[in-house]
Length: 461
Image (cartoon, rainbow, N blue to C red; front, side, top):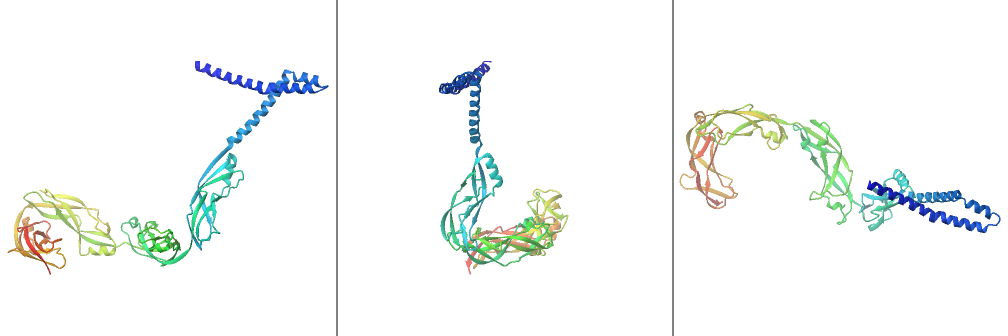
């Protein structure tokens, strides 16, 4: 209630102030003016004085003056309120100059335009605007120049400001050179994994590059090391094996460091013919156990759900597997009884797809036995150029190999498939103690050399 009373008192005080203002500055001056006029008139003074002294007359005159004052103030306020500013951002800058003869640097791509005026004029200006900022460079010659940007405002009552309003440009004479196009195929991974690009040809072998020969210019054609046609095979609609055509292939100029050089390329684009193939072949798989089975046990047999798989890739890579195999490792650590494994088929380098993603491998075990194979020659591997190695000590050039496995596996061992080696990689002249390593073709068996270390002497040829 107290708050309401305060508001009412404030409103009364405002209206009282308005009344005092009208009485002091409108009614009293008008009354005095009327009396002055009445005193100066002759015959009509009495009548005019009586009319002027009427209460209603003074009220109507005061009301009329107050209305005139109100409309004047309101019109001025509307003018002030209607004044506004509008910012048009990123307006395209268009330059006029001889593009065949000159290269211009320093031109901004866009500029911001601030329009100032009444709201209604701003609305019309935006609707009629071309949205372009222009700069006329047609009279400029080679060198550095400071020029003003312009904006065509369709409404005269609207003013504008540009950011930037002026720019500094460098004008260079245009030169040209011829470059051979190289092809760069991109997005191969977006092709179906069974498809591969066999060859790509383009309808142009050479292009003309245009720019400057000034070392300070970013458009210097002398920086261009190569022009590449970026053949995006990921952009082929429904690619299939056979001939595919790609139009509007982009050309890009690069320097020797692989950075893009901003020069004009004529023509800007070429058409590419992409020959896609689906090359495949068959590859054998080989199961290779890793780790150690349970004590006293050995692997007796290994079988898999498939023995060969179909592989897809480049012809050169696929053809290598005609005489080779894809190794698939299976960890048998701690295995004490027969077990089935589901293993992932790896994709070798250069192979994009395999017909089998996973296979089932069954590994059986039996009781472990061992045999000794004598007189396995020790070979040196990875010996550096212009070096030769010789074993030091009696019986250092051969070793006895202990082979462990099930009886069936051991009975089938071929001694010629066992190899003992010493790795001499990184060793130079002198005497060295090196470890003896043993391998064999039978993956179900394990191999250990009785002679674990030997001494070799390395000399120059």
